Image 1 (cartoon, one colour):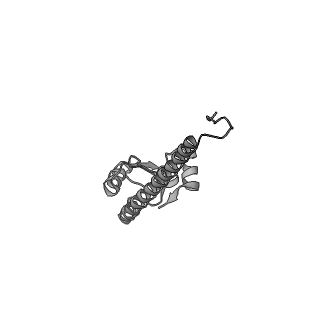
Image 2 (cartoon, one colour):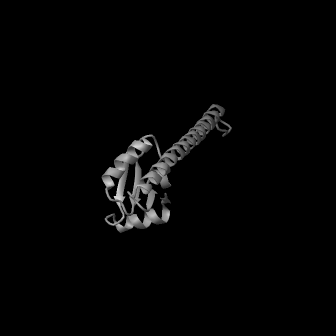
Image 3 (cartoon, one colour):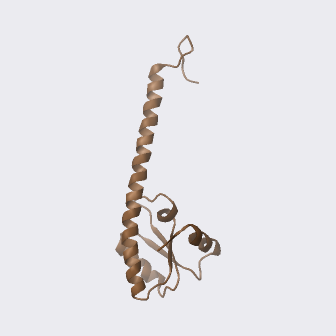
Length: 128
C-alpha cells in the first residue's frame, strides 16, 4: 500500500514518481516498437530481392516467412525463418540468404517440416 499522509492522501512525490515511471516505460516501448518495425522493413526488402533472384535461378518456388520477422517483434539478434517449397539445396539457400540480408537464415523444406509448422506458416506467415 502506498504511503499516505494523515488525511489519507497519497504522497505527491510518490505519485509524481509513478507517473514518471509510466511515461518512461511508454516512451521505451514505443521506441522499441519503432526500431523493430524499421528492422523488419529493412530485412524484408533485402529478403524479397534475394528470394526473387533465387527463384529466377530455379532454386525455390514458394516461400513463407515465419517467426519473429513475420509475426513477432524482431531484434538485432533475430534470425530469418523460412518454409520453402521446391528447394534443391536448403543449406545453400540459407547461406546465400544470410549473406543477402545480413543475419542467419533457417530454411525448412516444406516436404519435411512438421505439419503444425507448415499449417501455421501458411496461415499466419508472410508469403514471399
